[in-house]
Image (cartoon, rainbow, N blue to C red; front, side, top):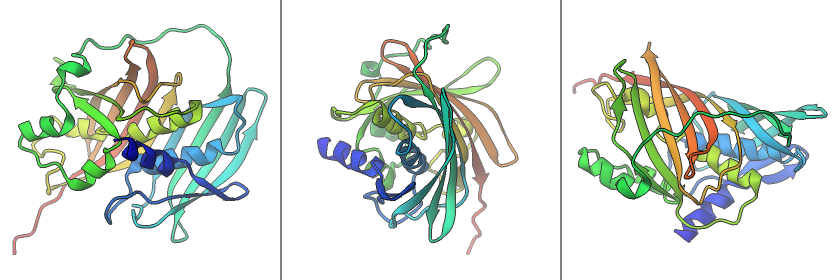
Length: 284
């Protein structure tokens, strides 16, 4: 587990190859599409590279343009749009083969006090009362793809049972934390959280419908991703990811997420729209 956490840290610490130009290493997994959380997190790390420590990322907005190739590094070009008194803004273009695969804008804010309120954490079973991810999937008869095992190796994940309100809004939650301690500053903790924020979110939109998330007849891909950081979490302690999906249609699904620490503090909010397309397989 410590080795998997070290690999994740290396994956998210992008290499500066020239001024405002960075290279993200490929993930240690087989050929396929790059995990969206990886590209978002590496792009955020590239944006952080040109912002001083006095400002922390408070939001990011990303569009996925093309599927990335897991066997190749990704080059990130950063544009310094603003360095103001309180805020800084960066745009990042992720490139492979000379073509953009993701556009990201991130905003940074200097530390500042102000009035505050936050939604309460939902009342759900704690991580000790929830099964591990593989066991939960096995109980539903779903096969856990090896690529997902590799991708999640650095984390402990314990999902709770999905639920719906009387309105029919699908909901689910999961607890997650890094599988081993990590010595990380604010920037890396937020980058790891950005990586994890792509876990299962758009899958919430699929819950009330027939195909399960790993069904071969279901084509799912993130289209865009937005995240707001309210504080810096400790990602090697348990965090609750509470998700809901108020809408799906036209082969797209929309989902929202709230991330809380173990003490019940809201540390981040997330929103995502994704492709949720049922593909008819042609008979031979």
